[in-house]
Image 1 (cartoon, chains in turn yellow, purple):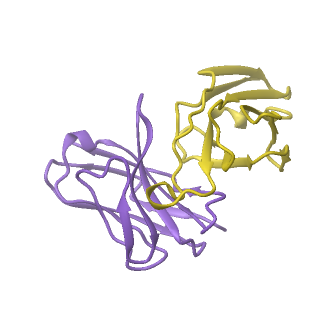
Image 2 (spheres, rainbow over the protein chains, first blue to last red):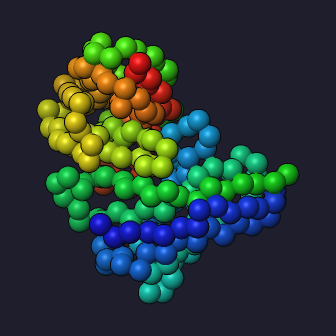
Length: 115
Length: 112
């Protein structure tokens, strides 16, 4: 499985933008880049995903490098409710068998948001 | 509201006493799975199911059983719990395309 590397922790101030990086230098052509986050005492929550082009949704934006070896999750205005562990995950669109639908979580980035 | 519901949220039990953690989803998803989360080890997949009556082992299946008799339900069974199964458990579901997974709120299990 292609692996991802994220910083252990990051800090931000409320209402400022946050850029969460993820390196995935061994990504394959069929790997989608997914981001999930886990708020304290809750289950993981889907944030966004993309393949090659930058993506935007109501929660965040995903910027994908041209060579796809890295990506950045962008929270445009951090709030205290965004304090969570953020996971960058690669999922093979062609995965079958035991890999189908499976999410392989790393350690993620702990985001602290200061008031 | 789309949701995955797990019960119970908290459970303390004794070694060897069989227990079942229930999981139900209301999105008609084909794919369901169970994860456990432990400090320093992250989330690891226990079992998964691609549809009714189709289940298979994940990365850490030892000591667990599952069943998928109905599309909406995917219970996790511990026939003889041991202290090393003390953990935080999450159930998840997604559609056939697996683009977005929905997770339950978690079940914190303590085996003494």
